[in-house]
Each structure stands twice: as structure tokens, then as C-alpha cells.
Image (cartoon, rainbow, N blue to C red; front, side, top):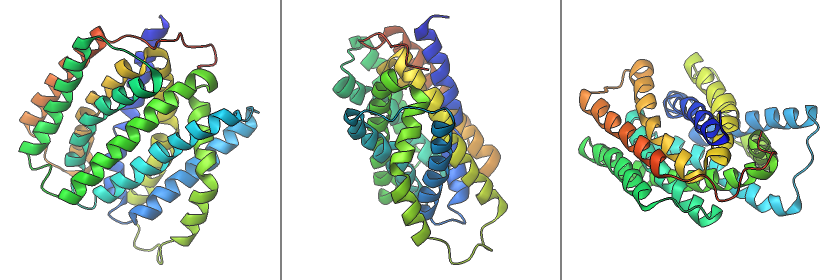
Length: 298
């Protein structure tokens, strides 16, 4: 398997893991305050990341890597989890997942701005069409009925796209799991301190589903998923592999239907089938990263 194909496979595994994030967050915020949820998942994942870095005796990042790591922390450790948790108080999990269709386009744009990638013009046709299909479907289904929820989700998409692109660049030097681990460690002191200040007044009202959801978003959404995702972006190219996120709504909507009993109609499935075709087209016309991935991508 060549490195580009390996990147697409790794990216696909990351998307599968991330697909459960919004349904799990929706379950968690029914019992847990969204601010505490964001801080708790960052703290738990940060402690796990610190433990792994210590056990494997990883070198500290260079001083020049601290600012990019801070951008990753703000984008994917704090920004996306917090904004989506707040948004899910105003919209359903299924509606929020539709906004994820805009994330590949945001990631590809930041990949060009931050990474210097230059996909072929036809790539943008398929990428834009895929994003338009998902966003248009959300509009027709009332996905924008809550202005607050919609604005929060758009902010989350922008923050996440920047964090993905920045992390992918770092992964070529530090390695995928090292990037997310160091980003989590960097935010750990602030996250842990604020978490202690936002402790729930009572734990009795938090049910088992909420605790299980917190465990999922802490372990899989904040740590394990990024190991595959950043590796995929680094090996296969940010612009190209990012289009796999167009598949995330399909998997997420299935989970929302199974776990939350939210309605997923045939029209929703049809849109996602069309989106899959757009992903295939974007992959065909995408190019790998400008620079060949270095051996540190692992």
C-alpha cells in the first residue's frame, strides 16, 4: 500500500470514530453542562495524552512548534467541542451533523492557506458540490431554524478546519498522535483548573448514558480519532483526505437514529449517497501534499 492510499485509509478510520462525537455530545448535554463537558473531556484526554508521552519518552516540541500547537488546542480541543456542545442545546444532533458537511471545504481552504496545497480546479467543483448538498439539505429540513445554534455550528466548523489543517502540518514533523497529545497537554492546566470551578452542584442527576458519552468523547473523539485523522491528512494531503468528512454526516445520522431515535428519512440517505460520489470525485482530482511526508509521520 503506497503512502497516499495509507493516508486515505487512516483518514477514513478517523472519520468513523468522529462520527459518534455529535450524537454522544447530544446525549451528554442532556444531563451535563456544556462548558463542564468541554473542560472535562479536554482534561481527561489531556491526562491520557500526558501519560502516553511520558511512557514513550517523547521529546518536547521545539519552541517554533508551540504557536501551531496552541492553534490546534484552540481549534479542536476547546473551540469545536465547546461550540458544538452549546449549539446542541438549540438544535438536534441530526441537524448539527448536517453542518459537518461544510467542514471538508473549511479544512481544504485552510490547507491551502497554511500548507500551500494546490488541488486541481475540478477538486473544488466536487468539494463545493458536496458541501452545498449537505448544507442545502439542512436548510430544507429546517436545520437553520435556530439562528443561535446555526451560528455556533458555523463557528465550530471554522475553528475545527483551522485546527485540522494546522495539526496536519505539524504531523509531518512530530507524528499524528504526538501532535494531538501535545496539544491536549498544552491546554491541560487551564482546562483542569476551569473544570474544578465548574463542577456540577449535584451528580445524582447525571445518568449512565451521559457518563458513557463523556467517556467516548474524551477517549475516542479527543484522542484516538486524531491519531488516525492527523496521520491521514499528513500522508494523503490535507485538501484531498479532508473530503472524507463529507461521509461523516452519513455515519453520524445513522448513529443519531439508533441512539437518539431521531428521524432519518430516505431523502437524508439519498443526499449522503450523492455526497459519497462527490468524495470520490474530489479524491480523483486532489493532489497529495506539496512536500513528501517525512518518516516522523507515524
